[in-house]
Length: 320
Figure (cartoon, rainbow, N blue to C red):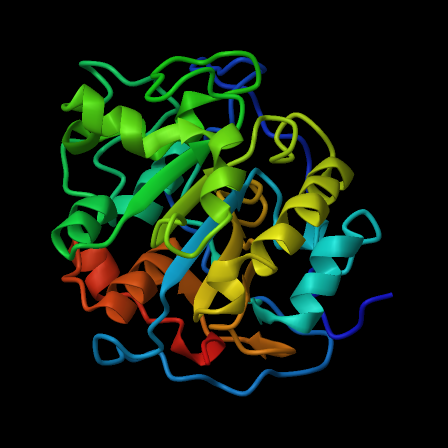
């Protein structure tokens, strides 16, 4: 068994299905009120960490790879036999054990992660005239800084596809909602691509983008399949990422998080791994999706997108 991991005692159930369903049903829909309860470490109180903002560039990294899993509160994953790989990685790396998703259902959380706002979207609508996040996103800042980025969506049949297809759920691909990305079809097609292209880009540090966002398909992200399935997928993919040139020769960061938890608790597990992350570390500082966004901005000296991420604490205590 993996020791020293977060244990939350609460009851969770299946997510209710909403009318804006993707290929295999919708994510949960509930009022947009964050759950602000604290998590508790089984090892006792975790020392308080500073929640202040660090100077831009502090804890800098060369690449960040973000993998977002689906609809599982921390209590369903951390310390559970169903997720042996995730728990091993969490024990060896840096774990934020007081990290909160922001709302329900999925899409507003993905938008918050990448733009610092839900853009007024409260359901899992598909991209279109009545479902557009007409706001700047993190990739606008990244491009302006001269860095590179890509979104890799597992199951996406072709680049820049704005509709559900098989196990590809467009609501888990936030970049298809930003006119700044989709307004130029060629630019979108070169940046929002199927996950099948990831291994080729991972082959060298020069071809792996600085900012990588990965959305597994509806089974591998634990949405339609059990925790065991997502854990097995991560056990296959994560070692390849950590052994890649960008992670062996450069100071790169891998982040694994969940879009949302359950109606009972929106506390989700968030793991920092790779050379930019501390080893065998737990943080009890209160963080959220806005904090993850702010951490990337602070590392690369990017201006905050909104007051939400501007005011969020940087997760610098998890970084080397």
